[in-house]
Length: 507
Image 1 (cartoon, rainbow, N blue to C red):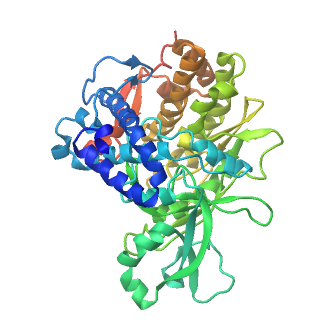
Image 2 (cartoon, helix red, strand yellow; image 1 turned 90 degrees about the vertical axis):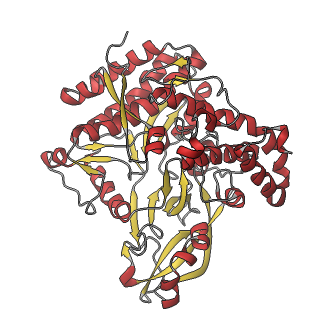
Image 3 (cartoon, helix red, strand yellow; image 1 turned 180 degrees about the horizontal axis):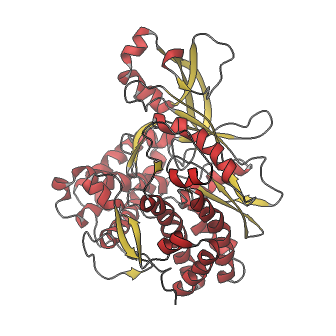
Protein backbone atom coordinates (compact mmCIF):
# COMPACT_ATOMS: atom_id res chain seq x y z
CA UNK A 1 0.00 0.00 0.00
CA UNK A 2 1.01 3.66 0.26
CA UNK A 3 3.69 3.09 2.88
CA UNK A 4 5.86 1.53 0.18
CA UNK A 5 6.10 4.89 -1.58
CA UNK A 6 5.36 7.67 0.90
CA UNK A 7 5.18 7.95 4.64
CA UNK A 8 2.05 9.20 6.34
CA UNK A 9 1.05 12.77 5.69
CA UNK A 10 -1.32 14.81 3.56
CA UNK A 11 0.34 13.85 0.30
CA UNK A 12 0.10 10.19 1.27
CA UNK A 13 -3.61 10.68 2.04
CA UNK A 14 -4.22 12.32 -1.36
CA UNK A 15 -2.31 9.53 -3.07
CA UNK A 16 -4.26 6.88 -1.17
CA UNK A 17 -7.54 8.35 -2.47
CA UNK A 18 -6.19 8.18 -6.02
CA UNK A 19 -4.94 4.62 -5.47
CA UNK A 20 -8.39 3.54 -4.29
CA UNK A 21 -10.00 5.14 -7.36
CA UNK A 22 -7.50 3.47 -9.67
CA UNK A 23 -8.28 0.11 -8.08
CA UNK A 24 -11.86 0.59 -9.27
CA UNK A 25 -11.43 2.35 -12.62
CA UNK A 26 -8.00 1.22 -13.85
CA UNK A 27 -6.51 -1.47 -11.61
CA UNK A 28 -3.79 -2.19 -14.16
CA UNK A 29 -2.28 1.25 -13.41
CA UNK A 30 -2.05 0.87 -9.63
CA UNK A 31 1.42 -0.64 -9.51
CA UNK A 32 2.86 1.91 -11.92
CA UNK A 33 1.21 4.74 -10.03
CA UNK A 34 2.73 3.67 -6.70
CA UNK A 35 6.14 3.25 -8.30
CA UNK A 36 5.95 6.69 -9.93
CA UNK A 37 4.88 8.63 -6.84
CA UNK A 38 8.35 9.37 -5.42
CA UNK A 39 9.63 10.61 -8.80
CA UNK A 40 6.49 12.68 -9.34
CA UNK A 41 6.85 14.27 -5.90
CA UNK A 42 10.52 14.99 -6.57
CA UNK A 43 9.75 16.57 -9.97
CA UNK A 44 7.16 18.93 -8.50
CA UNK A 45 9.44 19.65 -5.55
CA UNK A 46 12.44 20.44 -7.74
CA UNK A 47 10.43 22.91 -9.77
CA UNK A 48 9.04 24.51 -6.65
CA UNK A 49 12.48 24.69 -5.07
CA UNK A 50 13.86 26.43 -8.16
CA UNK A 51 10.97 28.89 -8.22
CA UNK A 52 11.33 29.74 -4.53
CA UNK A 53 14.98 30.63 -5.02
CA UNK A 54 14.49 32.46 -8.32
CA UNK A 55 11.62 34.54 -7.00
CA UNK A 56 13.38 35.46 -3.75
CA UNK A 57 10.81 33.73 -1.56
CA UNK A 58 13.27 31.40 0.09
CA UNK A 59 16.92 30.57 -0.50
CA UNK A 60 16.86 26.83 -1.10
CA UNK A 61 20.63 26.52 -1.28
CA UNK A 62 23.12 26.24 -4.13
CA UNK A 63 21.99 24.64 -7.35
CA UNK A 64 22.76 24.66 -11.04
CA UNK A 65 22.65 28.33 -12.03
CA UNK A 66 21.36 29.44 -15.42
CA UNK A 67 20.34 32.63 -17.19
CA UNK A 68 17.54 34.86 -15.89
CA UNK A 69 18.28 33.83 -12.27
CA UNK A 70 17.04 30.32 -13.00
CA UNK A 71 18.31 27.66 -10.60
CA UNK A 72 17.88 23.94 -11.22
CA UNK A 73 18.13 21.38 -8.45
CA UNK A 74 18.91 17.69 -8.97
CA UNK A 75 16.65 16.68 -6.10
CA UNK A 76 13.89 18.32 -4.12
CA UNK A 77 15.23 17.23 -0.73
CA UNK A 78 11.73 16.60 0.63
CA UNK A 79 9.13 13.86 0.42
CA UNK A 80 6.19 16.25 0.04
CA UNK A 81 6.83 19.45 -1.98
CA UNK A 82 4.69 21.43 0.47
CA UNK A 83 7.44 20.92 3.07
CA UNK A 84 9.43 23.53 1.15
CA UNK A 85 6.80 26.08 2.14
CA UNK A 86 6.93 25.94 5.91
CA UNK A 87 3.42 26.21 7.32
CA UNK A 88 1.76 26.37 3.90
CA UNK A 89 -1.04 24.06 4.99
CA UNK A 90 -2.16 26.90 7.27
CA UNK A 91 -0.93 30.02 5.43
CA UNK A 92 -1.52 28.93 1.82
CA UNK A 93 -3.79 25.88 1.92
CA UNK A 94 -4.99 26.42 -1.63
CA UNK A 95 -1.50 26.34 -3.07
CA UNK A 96 -0.58 23.35 -0.91
CA UNK A 97 -3.55 21.48 -2.37
CA UNK A 98 -2.50 22.46 -5.90
CA UNK A 99 1.00 21.07 -5.37
CA UNK A 100 -0.19 17.75 -3.99
CA UNK A 101 -2.79 17.45 -6.73
CA UNK A 102 0.00 17.99 -9.27
CA UNK A 103 2.05 15.18 -7.72
CA UNK A 104 -0.80 12.69 -7.78
CA UNK A 105 -1.82 13.48 -11.35
CA UNK A 106 1.76 13.40 -12.59
CA UNK A 107 2.18 9.94 -11.09
CA UNK A 108 -1.01 8.79 -12.84
CA UNK A 109 0.25 10.19 -16.14
CA UNK A 110 3.61 8.47 -15.71
CA UNK A 111 1.84 5.15 -15.14
CA UNK A 112 -0.33 5.34 -18.25
CA UNK A 113 0.74 3.64 -21.48
CA UNK A 114 1.09 5.75 -24.65
CA UNK A 115 -2.25 6.38 -26.33
CA UNK A 116 -2.57 5.63 -30.02
CA UNK A 117 -2.33 8.57 -32.40
CA UNK A 118 -3.15 9.11 -36.04
CA UNK A 119 -0.68 9.81 -38.81
CA UNK A 120 -1.68 13.35 -39.80
CA UNK A 121 0.35 16.35 -38.51
CA UNK A 122 -2.19 17.36 -35.86
CA UNK A 123 -2.52 13.88 -34.39
CA UNK A 124 1.23 13.42 -34.48
CA UNK A 125 1.71 16.73 -32.66
CA UNK A 126 -0.56 15.57 -29.83
CA UNK A 127 1.45 12.37 -29.56
CA UNK A 128 4.61 14.44 -29.19
CA UNK A 129 2.99 16.70 -26.58
CA UNK A 130 2.73 13.65 -24.35
CA UNK A 131 6.52 13.58 -24.08
CA UNK A 132 6.29 16.61 -21.78
CA UNK A 133 4.58 14.52 -19.13
CA UNK A 134 5.16 17.07 -16.33
CA UNK A 135 3.46 19.84 -18.33
CA UNK A 136 4.63 23.46 -18.20
CA UNK A 137 8.43 23.55 -18.13
CA UNK A 138 8.68 26.13 -15.32
CA UNK A 139 5.50 25.82 -13.26
CA UNK A 140 5.49 23.33 -10.36
CA UNK A 141 1.75 22.86 -10.89
CA UNK A 142 1.94 21.71 -14.49
CA UNK A 143 -0.17 18.68 -13.60
CA UNK A 144 -2.69 20.34 -11.28
CA UNK A 145 -6.26 19.37 -12.19
CA UNK A 146 -8.31 20.77 -9.31
CA UNK A 147 -11.97 20.00 -9.93
CA UNK A 148 -11.38 16.60 -11.50
CA UNK A 149 -11.33 13.36 -9.57
CA UNK A 150 -9.24 10.40 -10.68
CA UNK A 151 -11.94 9.00 -12.94
CA UNK A 152 -12.14 12.37 -14.72
CA UNK A 153 -8.36 12.40 -15.20
CA UNK A 154 -8.53 8.93 -16.73
CA UNK A 155 -11.36 9.96 -19.03
CA UNK A 156 -10.18 13.38 -20.21
CA UNK A 157 -6.47 14.10 -19.58
CA UNK A 158 -3.75 14.31 -22.23
CA UNK A 159 -2.88 10.61 -22.06
CA UNK A 160 -6.46 9.69 -23.00
CA UNK A 161 -6.91 8.46 -26.55
CA UNK A 162 -10.16 10.37 -26.96
CA UNK A 163 -12.77 12.27 -25.02
CA UNK A 164 -16.17 13.60 -26.03
CA UNK A 165 -17.71 16.87 -27.14
CA UNK A 166 -21.36 17.35 -26.27
CA UNK A 167 -23.81 20.03 -27.38
CA UNK A 168 -26.36 22.38 -25.90
CA UNK A 169 -29.07 24.35 -27.62
CA UNK A 170 -29.09 28.01 -26.58
CA UNK A 171 -31.96 30.38 -27.29
CA UNK A 172 -30.94 32.89 -29.96
CA UNK A 173 -31.22 35.92 -27.70
CA UNK A 174 -28.83 34.39 -25.14
CA UNK A 175 -26.17 33.45 -27.68
CA UNK A 176 -23.37 35.94 -28.39
CA UNK A 177 -21.06 35.56 -31.35
CA UNK A 178 -20.57 33.24 -34.28
CA UNK A 179 -22.11 29.91 -35.13
CA UNK A 180 -19.19 27.87 -33.87
CA UNK A 181 -21.16 24.74 -34.70
CA UNK A 182 -23.69 25.69 -37.41
CA UNK A 183 -27.02 23.89 -37.20
CA UNK A 184 -28.68 22.34 -40.22
CA UNK A 185 -31.76 24.49 -39.76
CA UNK A 186 -32.83 27.56 -37.78
CA UNK A 187 -35.12 26.77 -34.87
CA UNK A 188 -34.80 29.81 -32.61
CA UNK A 189 -31.81 28.15 -30.94
CA UNK A 190 -28.06 28.08 -31.61
CA UNK A 191 -26.03 24.93 -31.15
CA UNK A 192 -23.05 25.41 -28.86
CA UNK A 193 -20.39 22.69 -28.35
CA UNK A 194 -19.26 21.92 -24.79
CA UNK A 195 -16.78 19.58 -23.17
CA UNK A 196 -18.51 16.45 -21.94
CA UNK A 197 -17.26 16.99 -18.39
CA UNK A 198 -18.55 20.57 -18.43
CA UNK A 199 -21.89 19.38 -19.79
CA UNK A 200 -22.32 16.71 -17.13
CA UNK A 201 -20.70 18.33 -14.08
CA UNK A 202 -21.17 22.09 -14.38
CA UNK A 203 -24.14 22.98 -16.56
CA UNK A 204 -26.90 20.91 -14.84
CA UNK A 205 -26.23 22.36 -11.41
CA UNK A 206 -25.18 25.89 -12.32
CA UNK A 207 -27.83 26.62 -14.97
CA UNK A 208 -30.84 24.73 -13.65
CA UNK A 209 -33.17 27.73 -14.00
CA UNK A 210 -32.29 28.20 -17.68
CA UNK A 211 -32.73 24.49 -18.29
CA UNK A 212 -36.12 24.46 -16.55
CA UNK A 213 -37.29 27.46 -18.62
CA UNK A 214 -36.13 25.87 -21.86
CA UNK A 215 -33.67 28.69 -22.63
CA UNK A 216 -30.96 26.08 -22.53
CA UNK A 217 -31.32 22.46 -23.57
CA UNK A 218 -28.76 19.69 -23.27
CA UNK A 219 -28.71 17.72 -26.52
CA UNK A 220 -28.04 14.01 -26.96
CA UNK A 221 -25.54 14.45 -29.78
CA UNK A 222 -21.87 13.71 -29.11
CA UNK A 223 -18.68 13.42 -31.14
CA UNK A 224 -15.27 12.04 -30.25
CA UNK A 225 -12.31 14.41 -29.99
CA UNK A 226 -8.69 14.14 -28.88
CA UNK A 227 -7.44 16.14 -25.87
CA UNK A 228 -4.36 18.28 -26.34
CA UNK A 229 -1.94 19.39 -23.62
CA UNK A 230 -4.21 22.41 -23.11
CA UNK A 231 -7.03 19.99 -22.08
CA UNK A 232 -9.84 22.39 -22.99
CA UNK A 233 -8.59 22.44 -26.60
CA UNK A 234 -9.69 19.33 -28.46
CA UNK A 235 -8.78 18.03 -31.91
CA UNK A 236 -11.88 17.42 -34.04
CA UNK A 237 -12.26 14.51 -36.47
CA UNK A 238 -11.08 15.19 -40.05
CA UNK A 239 -13.47 17.14 -42.26
CA UNK A 240 -14.67 15.96 -45.67
CA UNK A 241 -11.54 17.46 -47.24
CA UNK A 242 -9.27 15.69 -44.75
CA UNK A 243 -8.35 18.90 -42.93
CA UNK A 244 -8.56 19.13 -39.17
CA UNK A 245 -9.68 21.83 -36.76
CA UNK A 246 -9.53 22.33 -33.03
CA UNK A 247 -12.26 23.35 -30.64
CA UNK A 248 -11.39 25.28 -27.49
CA UNK A 249 -14.18 24.85 -24.94
CA UNK A 250 -14.72 25.96 -21.37
CA UNK A 251 -13.43 23.58 -18.73
CA UNK A 252 -14.00 24.87 -15.21
CA UNK A 253 -11.07 23.14 -13.55
CA UNK A 254 -7.78 24.63 -12.42
CA UNK A 255 -4.72 23.79 -14.52
CA UNK A 256 -1.43 25.40 -13.38
CA UNK A 257 -2.58 28.80 -12.09
CA UNK A 258 -5.89 29.29 -13.86
CA UNK A 259 -9.40 27.94 -14.06
CA UNK A 260 -9.79 27.01 -17.70
CA UNK A 261 -13.15 28.48 -18.56
CA UNK A 262 -13.23 31.04 -21.39
CA UNK A 263 -14.20 34.69 -21.15
CA UNK A 264 -16.65 36.38 -23.48
CA UNK A 265 -13.77 38.66 -24.50
CA UNK A 266 -11.65 35.74 -25.70
CA UNK A 267 -14.44 34.40 -27.90
CA UNK A 268 -14.93 37.77 -29.57
CA UNK A 269 -11.28 38.83 -29.74
CA UNK A 270 -9.90 35.60 -31.19
CA UNK A 271 -11.29 35.99 -34.72
CA UNK A 272 -10.60 39.77 -34.69
CA UNK A 273 -6.97 39.24 -33.64
CA UNK A 274 -6.57 36.52 -36.27
CA UNK A 275 -7.66 38.96 -38.98
CA UNK A 276 -5.30 41.60 -37.58
CA UNK A 277 -2.37 39.18 -37.65
CA UNK A 278 -3.15 38.31 -41.25
CA UNK A 279 -2.65 41.98 -42.09
CA UNK A 280 0.53 42.33 -40.06
CA UNK A 281 2.45 39.12 -40.71
CA UNK A 282 5.02 39.69 -43.42
CA UNK A 283 6.89 36.38 -43.35
CA UNK A 284 6.07 33.12 -45.10
CA UNK A 285 7.89 31.43 -42.23
CA UNK A 286 4.97 32.14 -39.87
CA UNK A 287 1.98 29.82 -40.07
CA UNK A 288 -1.03 31.12 -38.15
CA UNK A 289 -3.51 28.70 -36.63
CA UNK A 290 -6.39 31.14 -37.01
CA UNK A 291 -9.23 31.38 -34.55
CA UNK A 292 -12.05 31.38 -37.07
CA UNK A 293 -15.16 31.59 -34.89
CA UNK A 294 -16.06 32.18 -31.27
CA UNK A 295 -19.21 32.41 -29.18
CA UNK A 296 -20.29 32.68 -25.57
CA UNK A 297 -23.46 32.59 -23.51
CA UNK A 298 -23.23 35.64 -21.21
CA UNK A 299 -25.28 34.29 -18.33
CA UNK A 300 -24.04 33.21 -14.92
CA UNK A 301 -20.27 33.64 -14.95
CA UNK A 302 -20.42 34.28 -18.69
CA UNK A 303 -17.55 31.80 -19.07
CA UNK A 304 -19.03 28.32 -18.75
CA UNK A 305 -20.47 27.79 -22.23
CA UNK A 306 -17.88 29.52 -24.41
CA UNK A 307 -16.20 27.96 -27.44
CA UNK A 308 -13.61 28.96 -30.06
CA UNK A 309 -12.86 27.20 -33.33
CA UNK A 310 -9.25 27.04 -34.56
CA UNK A 311 -7.48 25.96 -37.74
CA UNK A 312 -5.29 22.87 -37.66
CA UNK A 313 -2.14 22.01 -39.59
CA UNK A 314 -3.23 18.98 -41.59
CA UNK A 315 -3.21 19.77 -45.29
CA UNK A 316 -1.10 22.94 -44.77
CA UNK A 317 2.40 21.49 -44.47
CA UNK A 318 4.85 20.89 -47.27
CA UNK A 319 6.24 17.45 -48.20
CA UNK A 320 8.79 16.39 -45.60
CA UNK A 321 7.80 19.18 -43.19
CA UNK A 322 7.29 18.01 -39.61
CA UNK A 323 5.53 20.04 -36.92
CA UNK A 324 6.83 19.65 -33.38
CA UNK A 325 4.96 21.22 -30.45
CA UNK A 326 7.33 23.43 -28.51
CA UNK A 327 6.80 21.54 -25.28
CA UNK A 328 8.23 18.42 -26.93
CA UNK A 329 11.33 20.14 -28.36
CA UNK A 330 13.54 19.61 -25.28
CA UNK A 331 12.94 15.86 -25.56
CA UNK A 332 13.71 15.66 -29.29
CA UNK A 333 16.90 17.71 -29.58
CA UNK A 334 19.12 14.62 -29.90
CA UNK A 335 17.04 13.64 -32.91
CA UNK A 336 16.78 17.10 -34.48
CA UNK A 337 20.30 18.44 -33.91
CA UNK A 338 22.50 16.29 -36.12
CA UNK A 339 25.35 18.75 -36.69
CA UNK A 340 26.80 21.77 -34.93
CA UNK A 341 24.47 22.72 -32.03
CA UNK A 342 25.55 26.38 -32.25
CA UNK A 343 24.50 26.51 -35.89
CA UNK A 344 21.21 24.81 -35.06
CA UNK A 345 20.49 27.33 -32.30
CA UNK A 346 21.26 30.24 -34.64
CA UNK A 347 18.88 28.86 -37.26
CA UNK A 348 16.21 28.30 -34.63
CA UNK A 349 16.60 31.79 -33.16
CA UNK A 350 16.45 33.22 -36.70
CA UNK A 351 13.18 31.37 -37.20
CA UNK A 352 11.65 32.44 -33.88
CA UNK A 353 12.76 35.98 -33.15
CA UNK A 354 12.76 38.16 -36.30
CA UNK A 355 9.05 37.76 -37.17
CA UNK A 356 7.99 38.01 -33.52
CA UNK A 357 10.08 41.12 -32.88
CA UNK A 358 8.79 42.77 -36.07
CA UNK A 359 5.26 42.15 -34.85
CA UNK A 360 6.24 43.63 -31.49
CA UNK A 361 7.47 46.79 -33.24
CA UNK A 362 4.06 47.03 -34.92
CA UNK A 363 2.07 46.56 -31.73
CA UNK A 364 1.60 42.80 -31.21
CA UNK A 365 3.44 40.92 -28.44
CA UNK A 366 2.60 37.26 -28.89
CA UNK A 367 2.63 34.83 -25.98
CA UNK A 368 5.44 32.79 -27.53
CA UNK A 369 6.18 30.26 -24.83
CA UNK A 370 6.81 26.65 -25.82
CA UNK A 371 3.19 25.61 -25.41
CA UNK A 372 1.90 28.08 -28.02
CA UNK A 373 4.55 27.43 -30.68
CA UNK A 374 4.82 24.54 -33.11
CA UNK A 375 8.06 24.95 -35.08
CA UNK A 376 8.33 22.84 -38.19
CA UNK A 377 11.46 21.10 -39.41
CA UNK A 378 12.68 19.73 -42.71
CA UNK A 379 15.52 17.28 -42.28
CA UNK A 380 15.97 18.49 -38.70
CA UNK A 381 16.50 22.11 -39.74
CA UNK A 382 14.10 24.82 -38.53
CA UNK A 383 11.72 25.68 -41.35
CA UNK A 384 8.54 27.48 -40.25
CA UNK A 385 6.83 28.52 -37.02
CA UNK A 386 3.17 27.73 -36.42
CA UNK A 387 1.50 29.89 -33.77
CA UNK A 388 -1.66 29.10 -31.84
CA UNK A 389 -3.86 30.46 -29.04
CA UNK A 390 -3.99 34.26 -29.15
CA UNK A 391 -5.89 34.79 -25.89
CA UNK A 392 -2.78 35.66 -23.87
CA UNK A 393 -1.06 38.11 -26.23
CA UNK A 394 -0.82 41.85 -25.67
CA UNK A 395 -1.68 44.56 -28.18
CA UNK A 396 -0.10 47.99 -27.82
CA UNK A 397 -2.95 50.06 -29.16
CA UNK A 398 -0.93 53.28 -29.78
CA UNK A 399 1.60 51.37 -31.89
CA UNK A 400 -1.13 49.70 -33.89
CA UNK A 401 -2.82 53.02 -34.50
CA UNK A 402 0.46 54.63 -35.56
CA UNK A 403 0.94 51.84 -38.10
CA UNK A 404 -2.56 52.42 -39.45
CA UNK A 405 -4.16 49.33 -37.93
CA UNK A 406 -7.23 49.02 -35.79
CA UNK A 407 -8.79 46.07 -34.00
CA UNK A 408 -12.19 45.97 -32.38
CA UNK A 409 -11.66 44.39 -28.97
CA UNK A 410 -14.34 43.40 -26.52
CA UNK A 411 -14.78 46.23 -23.99
CA UNK A 412 -12.40 45.96 -21.05
CA UNK A 413 -10.20 43.35 -22.70
CA UNK A 414 -6.87 42.93 -20.92
CA UNK A 415 -5.09 42.13 -24.19
CA UNK A 416 -5.16 45.80 -25.18
CA UNK A 417 -2.72 48.05 -23.33
CA UNK A 418 -0.99 51.39 -23.60
CA UNK A 419 1.76 50.36 -21.18
CA UNK A 420 4.94 49.51 -23.06
CA UNK A 421 6.53 47.72 -20.10
CA UNK A 422 3.57 45.34 -19.75
CA UNK A 423 3.52 44.90 -23.51
CA UNK A 424 7.22 44.10 -23.88
CA UNK A 425 7.29 41.88 -20.79
CA UNK A 426 4.85 39.52 -22.49
CA UNK A 427 7.15 38.69 -25.41
CA UNK A 428 10.30 39.03 -23.32
CA UNK A 429 9.29 36.49 -20.70
CA UNK A 430 7.66 33.96 -23.02
CA UNK A 431 10.07 33.99 -25.99
CA UNK A 432 13.40 34.49 -24.22
CA UNK A 433 13.00 33.04 -20.74
CA UNK A 434 10.40 30.29 -21.03
CA UNK A 435 11.14 29.27 -24.63
CA UNK A 436 14.76 29.88 -25.60
CA UNK A 437 15.90 29.59 -22.00
CA UNK A 438 14.72 25.98 -21.87
CA UNK A 439 16.38 25.09 -25.18
CA UNK A 440 19.69 26.68 -24.19
CA UNK A 441 19.80 24.58 -21.01
CA UNK A 442 18.99 21.39 -22.92
CA UNK A 443 21.56 22.12 -25.64
CA UNK A 444 24.12 22.53 -22.90
CA UNK A 445 23.20 19.25 -21.23
CA UNK A 446 22.87 17.22 -24.43
CA UNK A 447 25.60 18.72 -26.62
CA UNK A 448 27.89 20.71 -24.34
CA UNK A 449 27.00 24.07 -25.89
CA UNK A 450 28.12 26.67 -23.38
CA UNK A 451 25.43 29.05 -22.18
CA UNK A 452 27.58 32.14 -22.75
CA UNK A 453 28.08 31.11 -26.36
CA UNK A 454 24.41 30.26 -26.75
CA UNK A 455 23.21 33.62 -25.45
CA UNK A 456 25.80 35.42 -27.56
CA UNK A 457 24.22 33.77 -30.61
CA UNK A 458 20.74 34.83 -29.50
CA UNK A 459 21.98 38.38 -28.84
CA UNK A 460 23.33 38.60 -32.39
CA UNK A 461 19.92 37.64 -33.73
CA UNK A 462 18.28 40.23 -31.47
CA UNK A 463 20.71 42.88 -32.73
CA UNK A 464 19.76 42.03 -36.31
CA UNK A 465 16.02 41.96 -35.60
CA UNK A 466 15.14 44.97 -33.46
CA UNK A 467 16.27 48.51 -32.73
CA UNK A 468 15.56 51.51 -30.53
CA UNK A 469 13.69 51.25 -27.27
CA UNK A 470 12.62 47.65 -27.90
CA UNK A 471 16.24 46.61 -28.36
CA UNK A 472 17.17 48.49 -25.19
CA UNK A 473 14.41 46.70 -23.24
CA UNK A 474 15.34 43.20 -24.40
CA UNK A 475 19.07 43.73 -23.77
CA UNK A 476 18.82 45.68 -20.50
CA UNK A 477 20.84 44.52 -17.48
CA UNK A 478 17.65 43.26 -15.86
CA UNK A 479 14.38 42.13 -17.39
CA UNK A 480 11.00 41.15 -15.88
CA UNK A 481 10.46 37.52 -14.90
CA UNK A 482 6.94 36.22 -14.35
CA UNK A 483 6.87 35.07 -10.73
CA UNK A 484 4.60 32.04 -11.00
CA UNK A 485 4.77 30.94 -7.36
CA UNK A 486 4.43 34.44 -5.90
CA UNK A 487 1.31 34.81 -8.01
CA UNK A 488 -0.20 31.71 -6.38
CA UNK A 489 0.83 32.73 -2.87
CA UNK A 490 -0.33 36.34 -3.12
CA UNK A 491 -3.31 35.92 -5.44
CA UNK A 492 -2.82 39.31 -7.10
CA UNK A 493 -2.68 38.47 -10.79
CA UNK A 494 0.50 38.83 -12.85
CA UNK A 495 3.62 39.60 -10.81
CA UNK A 496 6.97 40.29 -12.47
CA UNK A 497 10.37 40.47 -10.76
CA UNK A 498 13.64 41.79 -12.21
CA UNK A 499 16.23 39.13 -13.10
CA UNK A 500 19.71 39.27 -14.63
CA UNK A 501 19.62 39.28 -18.41
CA UNK A 502 22.17 37.17 -20.34
CA UNK A 503 21.52 39.31 -23.42
CA UNK A 504 22.92 42.42 -21.73
CA UNK A 505 26.60 41.62 -21.94
CA UNK A 506 27.23 38.41 -23.84
CA UNK A 507 30.67 36.98 -23.13
